[in-house]
Image (cartoon, rainbow, N blue to C red; front, side):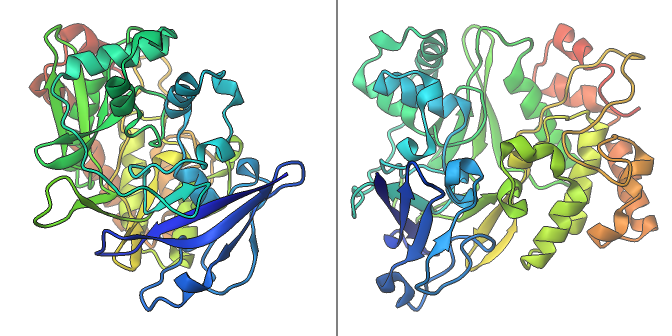
Length: 408
């Protein structure tokens, strides 16, 4: 059975989302095929959806590889991971393991990450403003109901709000919310958390900014029970001047897509390979990427997989996105001193050491002295990490869990 999915694309500085092409997927045969439609190609401001896998602006058929269930990487980037699939399964009364990429592409979602959207019909509904969340605690409780499999009592409004932002990646419960006139991704606490994730992530975002890394605007909301909700402004959206609640969309792709991999191939990726591929795609990010790699070593962030590195389209040009999903791994001082990042660092593979980080400096466009200076600056900059924890109310017990996680 051939399934047809219409692919829409938002071009720079316009709210209009136009039909860009048609994706056809033959379920038993796969992988899928895509072609740009003539009406899109005839636009003077037409841009490729992706600079790597859909970069050819010609009316020819482009075929996806066998990865990502036969879906182009940039399409997969616009689809949810664990949490969003759980919410989708809950709303459709099916097991989350039965959710496929094609299922998630059948219905439009104006809050997908990036500038593309999908529909099984050659139209998408007119975008409506996003309602403000007046009771964050209730939304946290609703998310917990979904996690517990007890979502039967959710009303339609709660389901609708919870669906906002489910196309964003990651496993933590979350939703996109309107806050202070801007679009934020709200990450909620859950019963099984080992520490206050929101306060720790807030502290890490501030620490990253302190050592010179670009991060989104972040805020922390404290609930009455003392837990926190972490808010991170959507860097793929820009408010439309004079139209509160409306936003321009910016293109997005992950480093996974840049390298042409899928999730199972994450260990094959590396920071030097990202730098090489970005340069080939016309993206200059070597120094910034190197600083982020060093930061992840310095704060023991081993959740630095390829989906946690992204690129956005600003106007017609692509650049590395602000850093996101920064979270250290708890470690006891003196134990497990050596660790690996989730992707390669240098010639010694994934080993999180200074020697390994310096070994491939040239691939980031850096001299040995430049790379060494960045490593020293970042390592020294994180030494007072505990003050950032204190500034955001991380408890003494939670702070102690990370006492062996940072460079000293």
